Length: 384
Image (cartoon, rainbow, N blue to C red; front, side):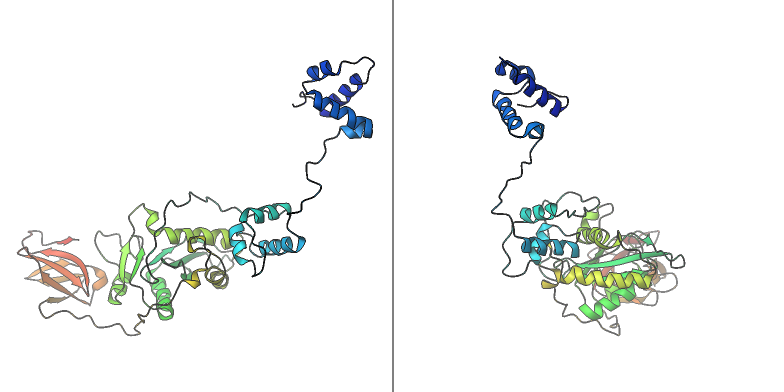
């Protein structure tokens, strides 16, 4: 039973003084003070043995902990935490050397708390995924996006726009580039470097806005047209549905928690230096829970599809009706102009017959762009 609310020491001292009086009724006093008889006699014995000091609360810590980890084990875990302050117990456990005691992650948590180590909590951790989906092999799908831009400490450098590309199967970071703007030219330069090192993926997914998408309905950006010509299929996420790019979004949160929230980055060159250092840590040292605590580099291999330094020519079948895109992105057929897209200016597209009379599919390489309807009075394309 608990003591009545007031000062614990004063209540205990008052109880002891009253209980030591001649002919004191210990049972009645215990009832009056709201404690059990066992508790009352305990405090009488402690007061007799140590006086007023015996009425102080004692530590509940056991005098002996035979299963507590030894100091060498605790030192190793604390040093790992100091090296990787944002990593939880499961990740630290994966880094323990061979022959080290097999500790449960909750034991590692207890060691960190006992040594005053505070884990750095992620901002907005979100809900854990109920199920995970990944493609069956590396380079089947890459996810690409810009992380939110942030200011640089050098006033002349303005802001940094981190471009990130992540392999869906392995979570391997293909590129992490410090860009000065979200422009198609800078993305193409970064992708060219990535393609030269890692080869061409089968498909890349990105969102709908510039530079990979366009504001026009059904049109294609210059960057997307370049990737189509390389034989890379481009997909776009559903609007207002960031889960489509979930792995890259999660990568952004890790980048923010482990680097950007602490670093004071001066210039784009300084950003890239720190990005390169952290990217190696992420790919080659940081265990990933979704990969069975493997590092992403353990599951990634480069694509066998090499990057062509010279773009291959655009070729079509002899049955196709080939037209060159001119002016503001139009082709001319049967004395009428049809808008195809400014991204294809100077290039050739193919018109292919469909089962409907007067309706043609328009292709660029092997990518179906749109349809044109000769019977439509407006002579506009019908986007697909």
